[in-house]
Amino acid sequence: MINKKEFTERVFNPNQLSGFNETHYIKLPVDFIHDLSQANSLEDVLNKIAFWISHVFNADRASITLQENEEFLKLYSISGNQAIPLDFKIPIYQTFVGRTFATAQLMICDDVTQSNELDCQMLAQHGMGTCMDAPMIHNDICIGTLNVADRRKHHYSLQQAILLQCLANWIAMNIKLHLQVQEMEVLASIDELTGAFNRRIFIQESNQTMLEFYNSKTPFSMGILDIDHFKTLNDCYGHKAGDHVLKVMSERIQKVLRANDFLARIGGEEFAIILPACISKEAVQVFKRIRTAIEMMQIHYDEHVICLTVSIGIAEAKIHDANVEGVFKRADKALYRAKKSGRNQIYLAD
Image 1 (cartoon, rainbow, N blue to C red):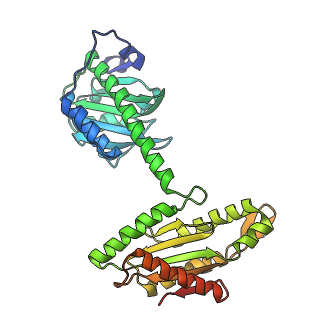
Image 2: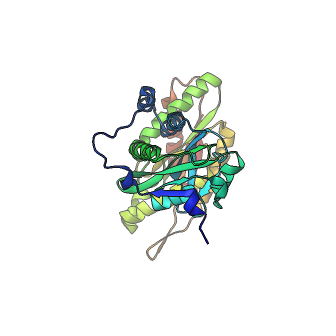
Image 3: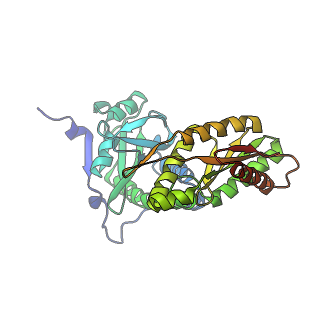
């Protein structure tokens, strides 16, 4: 019995599609290179790539996938035919493009109607005849795929496969650079110990929130939270225990906050919280839940069970505040009053 795949599928190792002499070259539109150099985000890069790849190959469909996890690829950009929509997670082990990714080989399905793989069937149902998928490889690691499809069957040539793989390698480097920049930006904004935002990002966020308050009169409240007797805790259990407490407490606070609330570690044991669209009366209730949740915590470290409390000062933005520093100072004074009044307290600024 003859395997239909012999007639419908071609597979190329990327090494087969490179290493040619100087007589081999590719041509690209100048605007492709210009647009890519002007992209200021990974999303922008991927959208521009999908658009220009469809143009270069005169393809009915062009798309890009990146690895989401061990089981799925995620579609990030599509130009043209929407046979496989952006919100569809592509299984790595049940699809043609998944095999391209898993094997790191360029693959051509000359007739998608003959394939029993999910993505090829979806393409066939929406009028596509053939597809070609190339692995995007950077430093010998496949990070995703670059894909084109055409309504005509048996459409793609070896020369087009060479071009797509060459572009996939080049684009993989570009994507990797943007991913590295994103990672650096995240690392620069996050407190490494607790995972909360750091003081630098708190300043940016609070200034932006204050600007929105001036422009739209959207209220917000700010709270400053400080762990009571944290030095004693460190002296008693050690600094590693103190670090563990900070991390666990930060995670607990995040569970109480809403999705758009903002938490930052702004000092050793001091945290700032911004509650957008929240007046002081509502903010007090939020911070009461935080204070109670922390008071009820029992943090296990080595053979110890550590309990703690926090003091909190709250201030709502007022129209007379010249800048966000005024809100912060009033919250800080309220925190001082909470500590002076016996700790494990919440005080609202006048």
